Amino acid sequence: MITDVPELGLRERKRLATRRAIQFAVLELVAERGLENVTVDEISRVADISPRTFFNYFTSKEDALIGDPPTLPDDARVDEFVAAGPHSDILSGLGDMLATSGESVPDDLDLLKLRRSLMKQHPQLFALRMATMRTFEDQLDVVVSRRLAADEPALLDDPAELAQRSRLITFVAFGVMRHAWSCWADSGGGPTELGARLRTSFEQLNRLLVSETAK
Image (cartoon, rainbow, N blue to C red):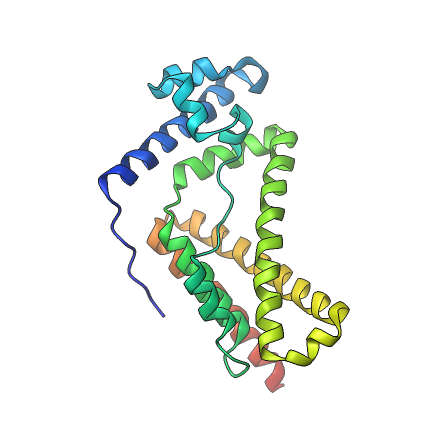
């Protein structure tokens, strides 16, 4: 299922442009001087904003450095995934749902490359990034658990089994997402291509599973 990427309004484009300018400023300054030698005032000057505006977007320079975590799509799209039914493949459904989210929030390849480089130099930033990813992981786990319970209500009588299945599917989904992001970055794609790449990675996993089952 391919969805159209909604066109952003002027206010949202300006907001995203300011957010991007702040992130570029902090990434480039830290790359040049090191994390401890960069201040919010300097970041704001390079981004051509006030420090007050900086804090409207980020709580700290570290927050700006690690970037935004993935997000789930809107409630209607999540509910559609949950209610798809047991005859609808759950991994394919996850791929579609996550691709919708990836298409609606543009990512930036240049920012991604700068951030990756800095994460290697500053392990504490990588740890912070992983903390934000764990938050999203927990959110996704809740959605997967809802889907499993809707598909098989008897699982509600065995919370431990439901939690184990949900966590396993969530971990698999995260592995597929990492594969998609890596392929997307290597190809130099844009936000629309990221959504398509997410779908492709989930489809590749499904083909592998079907192939193994057929043996």
